Image (cartoon, rainbow, N blue to C red; front, side, top):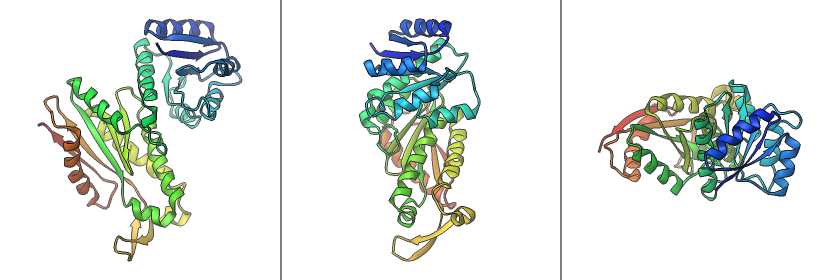
Length: 305
């Protein structure tokens, strides 16, 4: 049984959420404000922290920041409940370190689904990439099996960074590291649905599992958000021109475009029984096609066998 700490300054909301979580088989501890939530954390760490965005001082965002910047509690998943559905509130939550958010009013089933998804990721915490913060390895394989077992069509979006090696050579390790973190942050932001999984295969290779109808939109959104983020880490003249000079593979000076995300979308049908590794080989060919246009492209393919 998982233990969830829920902090909200409204009694009716505390009672309602506690009832939903207990119905889902969770043990619930309640705090009537942010200060009490922090005190309970120090006394005994839960498995997940659920916070109201609009609590009085300290706010839900401030409690979230406290959790994520504490060596003892930083690994705990945090879900924020908010009455704001706009992008600004969502971004503030992610900047404070929140793992997910849920807009009010919400369906009890959705709350339980999001809690379950965060607990699954927390249980795989040792498999998260330390730079991107995304799960990898066996977690990706398990999610692929889970999606296929549902018997519904879905898509795999493979994303990687164009010309990442010369980019790292030119701007250094810290900027290359920041680029990997930027991809991780971007994929967490756009994966705002429990029906989406974001993972880090390794190096500059990433993966999304999502509904087929969402794949193109999410890939394009990931590309746009990453492009905006990476501009923070390169000199203004490079931002202005979009290009820089670095060494090619043969050691000669060559001009490159600032690294961008390319995407290969694979539509998986219920009849597909190919293992993930074989699908990956097909995608590698598709990704090469996406890069022929100069990078930042999207190609789509289907797998039936």
